[in-house]
Length: 370
Image (cartoon, rainbow, N blue to C red; front, side, top):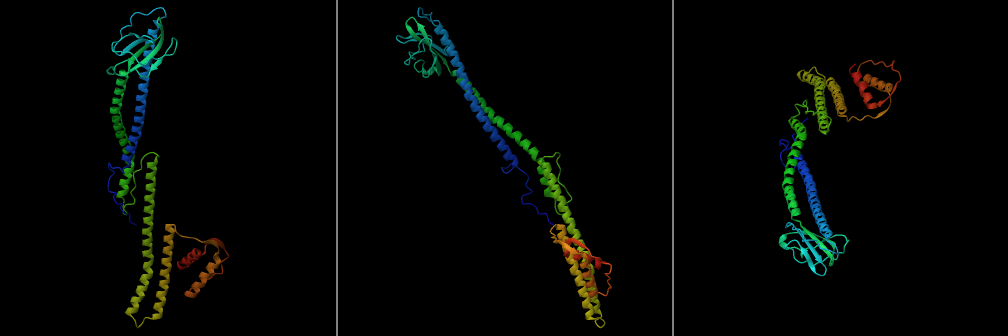
């Protein structure tokens, strides 16, 4: 039996794409990276919406406070001065801007038609309220009842804090996600490598096993996981190979031992006949050669039978067989080919289920060894 070396088996598992370790790590990084990107984009969008909603609510409350100061009979004092990130306008439908809190605010060209008690309205385009250099603003209009009629209080708040917060969070994500993926890749590489270490140990041990040391076994990891079962299967296979090799060696040894005797007998009589041709009889030599040749043929057939039996390829044709008939046939053969006196008076009838040819071989072997 020859255990061939697998081409390329001496190469150790390295950092190449075919490695299970690298592919598993890459898959983990891709999956985690995709999840982080989706989560990051979702978080940024929701953050912007929430911050914008907070600014809208603050502007609405401020507009409602200013509108509450007006009544059909009086105007409030001057608007309180506010910071640069907030502007307030009170706009009359007829007279335009009645009051403004900031010199940066210009007259609006888009007046929202609101009446007292109506719901507040977010103005989608406030280009007419603020200058472009002031940055993005969000404006809310609330109806107010003034002495001059229905007016509208417009409060705008800058969206610059929203943009700054979103930019900061985006920068944090852009810097943090690669670092997190690096950590995930490193941990995955280490964990997968540790998990595959027993497999590498098994492969390394199998690589060292040759036909001369089939008694060796691969290391058996603790536990009952897939790798442990793989080691058990490998050790079972090695045990079967070892037993098969032992049977082959026994077969060769038995064949050599059994064939030695008839071969030696034929050679001995041939040498005697050559040394003493005047006293040797060709007929006697031929009988001896034929007898030993028949013995050789029987031994070869028996050895082939043992070989098939060991390999599990022996085919048996089971049927009902009269054993007494086989005994009578063997006795008849012995009387015809030998000078033995064979008595079969005590043979009784007997029927078994088996292979007729193999049972006949068994009886012949028993008679030859008797």
